[in-house]
Length: 179
Image (cartoon, rainbow, N blue to C red; front, side):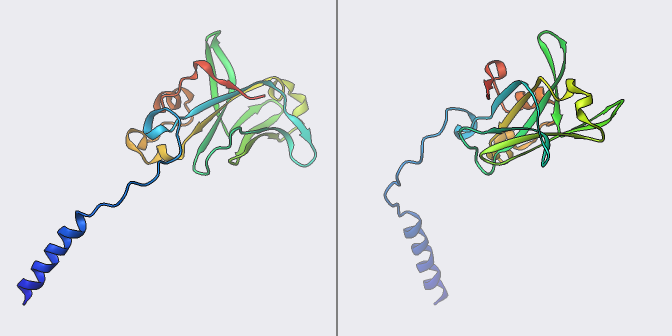
């Protein structure tokens, strides 16, 4: 009896595993790029001033067009200076700067539709206009799928802008400007 049941089970397994249904509809078109069409991108805002309001203090607000996915990661870097005219120094934020007047903190938040960069401190930031005026930031958007796929599964040192650019094969020679 057990042999007959085992035989039926094997025949049933073979029959069900060889069945094939109709092909489903094609998925939405993706962008050309690595890792299944996902592309990490870099945007830049140049020579921007922090706005001030009594609720949020000093901030820079921008919309993301198009919106990003809920799983995407946003990294923001501040241009802190240059080694020479062709070698910028990018510092990841959040970042705390210690100046003679006190501490200044850069921070940010983001949603799939926008981001805000904040500047706050232990002193009146208007005393250091060079740290809140004419600032340049790079916004790096990394698709969330990179955290779990193939060669992208190991995370780079996010504090090192150049390592992030290299890890995600980002061409930052033609960075898109955000107004």
